[in-house]
Amino acid sequence: MGASQSYTLRGQVTRLDATTRITLSVLALASGVYTYLGVRELLDGDETTVFLGALVYSSAVSVAIYAFWSYLMRFMPHVRSGRRMLYLAMAIGSAMIIAMSSWLNAAALAGSAALEQHLAVTTEEYQQKLNEAHENALAAQSLLPDIQLASQRFAGLSEQEARSGVLTGTSGSGTVVQLLRQMSSQLSGLQAEIEGSRQQVKTLFEQGGQHLATMRRLVSSQGPVADRSNAYGEEAVALSGLLTSLEQTSVAPAVRRAAEDLGRSFIAPISDGTDADLRDRQSRVVGTIEAAVKTQSQALATAADEILARPKVEPLRFTPLSAPEAVIRYARDFLPSWAGAISIDLLPAVLIFVLCIVQDVIRREEGEELEMGDMSAGEMMRALRIQKKLKAAERYDEPDERHSSTYHGEIMGPDEEDADIVQRNRPAGATLFPKTAAR
Image 1 (cartoon, rainbow, N blue to C red):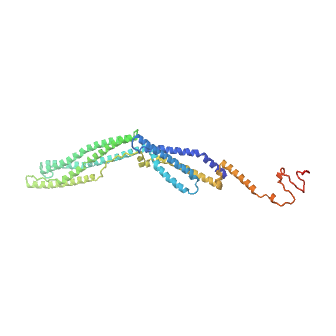
Image 2: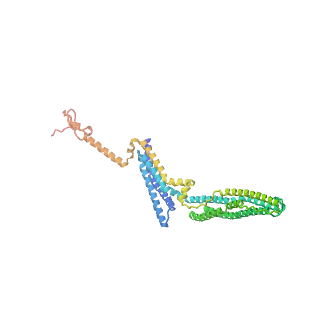
Image 3: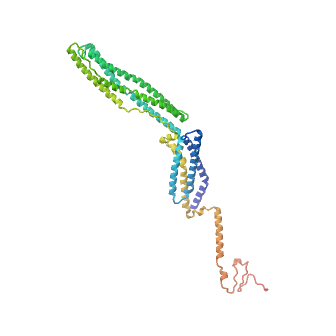
């Protein structure tokens, strides 16, 4: 049973020899083709230089892969001791193949998709930066309600003071009314500045949205990815400049300076009342207004500081990538392509393991007769001829007891099978061939 199985396995290995050679050739050729497509993305120069450089490199890769796996496939299954060193050689060679071929194969398989992935990711980053810059630019708008309320309060008090003298007890347009109107006017001017920046921010944000829409169309459109990447870079540069403009349109610094001016530059007017009592009341009201203005100024400055404390938006810089660089950067998103590229180069290792297992089974089944079972028909015939010569030599070298024995009155002839050739002379009995009387 064991001999039959080993004989069958040896026959199958012999039959698969041509298939194995063809398989290695096809895999090496496929790896060379994809390596050629990948390495073209890395070379610079005219078309002839790029073509020749890529062709030479890919040819060297194909030859190296075929030779490496052929050596291992011929030697490794037949090595009984020291196979660990061959396993080490296989590991080193596989790493070198991955380094010189597999990543270029992955670039050829998924290079365009990886570049589109890079453009899509960059677009999302630009979208995030645009939103952050827009929020920072509009952050000062949150101060607008407080400024409007303070301006309206000062304006209302001035009108009430002018009509009924609600603060000083004396109606008319005097020192207090003028001061209140002055504070209301300053706050109204700050309000107008903030409202004016809103329209500018809105315009810049809409322009940024248009650039992003164009960038998204370039990502999802058809055509060579290199041309789309160049157009994408132009849009990215324009959008980066727009982000800088948005960052500069923030009115938070202006609000901060205006708030400080309200408190620091407050000048209390001289009371212009007709009598001492009215002037005294005007002075007290002016002091109250000054305290209110400083409180409002401090509140606005604190709110402006919170806006200015936000991290600034740094404009992005679009970095074009080649197909191999994009495949390496976004390797996690293209694991199937990487697996296919590596499998093309390392599939012969599986065939080698199968051959090693089959040879081990053959050795176990045949035992010590492994080498004899591997003889060809010619070797077998030559061995039979040698065996016959050895037997003939042994027969002629044996001593002839018939000629060396003592004579006992009997002439010994040949054996019975040779009785038809030599006459036997036996005195005690009849001879096969009687002697004649004549001498």
